[in-house]
Length: 224
Image 1: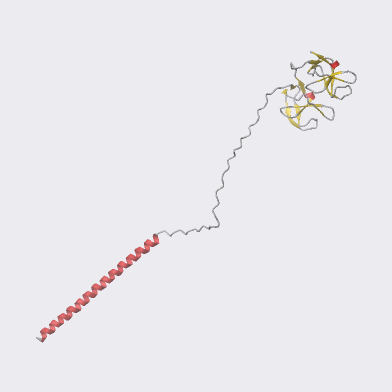
Image 2: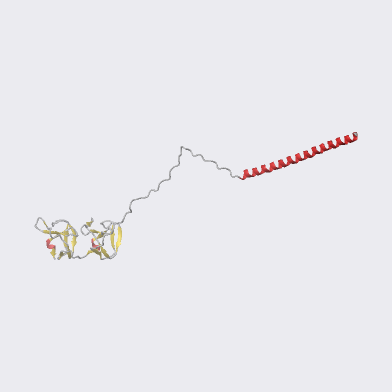
């Protein structure tokens, strides 16, 4: 009887021991599985954190330094300058013995502005200039330079109302015999202001030549 009870107690003790050992093993395995799962979750969180982009730093704008506005592009409303149309070219003289130096000033020592060949020119016949040597110069209207009297020959036009018939004829600065000679004219046509003759102190009659602006004695011309 005692042996039977002892064996029963022994088996109970053995069962308790085995249950304890089995429970401990299960608890150990469960803890190890939980630890492994935690480690995996931690590693995944670290990878996700490392792969996420870092936030850009914020730039603080100072309220005391406002942004400057862009400069406005101004559009000019001024009209373009239009070059004036050139006048219709009309000629009253010609270069007959080229080449002819058209000079900056009305004197032989002045620099040459342009060398002209044979052809027509327009000169200011009514305002010739006399240099220090007594030579006569005419301003070419289109070029603005000066031609010596010997280089040009005036053209005949239907406007001429008189002629030099007994050359040479002195065309003087003023209507009197002792006035200086502005130009010596050869035989040819002239245009005089027939309606406004001037009488000198001796009673001589003088006519103003319209193109040259000088004065011719009545005895030197013949009206057409």
